[in-house]
Length: 269
Ligand code: ARG
Image 1 (tube, rainbow, N blue to C red):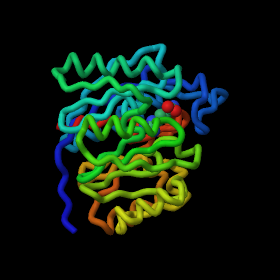
Image 2: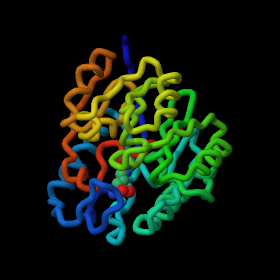
Image 3: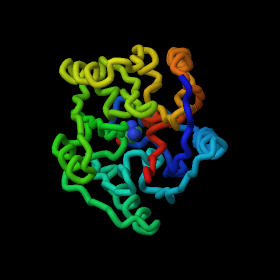
Image 4: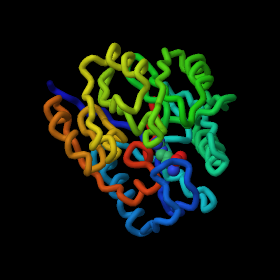
């Protein structure tokens, strides 16, 4: 199958102040040191890769008191130029929501909804051609799903996450193109697995090893799929489907429980 890349616009935040001083997911161990210069170099590699593929990368100013701000995907969800702000589950990250809102206001966005219910942006909302897939169970409130549906006017499909290692939807499922996804079934409840099978019968189904390398925390432009380089088992099936997998090393950010997708918020026109 012939694939085409379409130019994207991404919002990222450099990990200038990244560290692991608290633990709000099982990947985070405050006792494990982070190599900050290495972390920055790995992140810059990702940013530069997007730019060399022809994408636009916008930057958010990092704040010293918000070490997780590098995970920019969590700060909002943008579809059709409309911005659904975030509301974080943990107080350690709650001030990030305002940073994102300020950025959108300063960059000409006018359709902005400040949410009533907890949602961690694209951490839990994945946008396909037809649906908004929405994770719940660890972070985003099920009530945020109705709020998103009303605001975006797109059908929102709620999915129950059941494994704490896959606390955000974007750690267990990735949109490849249109209505094509890849996911790790065991991260979901039996009912949600059945929903995924029904909606996406041809999905690429990931193994435990690839999921555990955060291989599903991937970003696709319709052709190139940027994903953690350790998720080796995904490369061949992606190529078989006509995609071009690009392995990235974001090993330092993995200590915060995030990788490629977590660092990347897509600004959908
Ligand atoms: N330490 C961050 C947290 O637990 C990591 C967020 C990762 N972001 C993501 N989109 N999954 O909130």
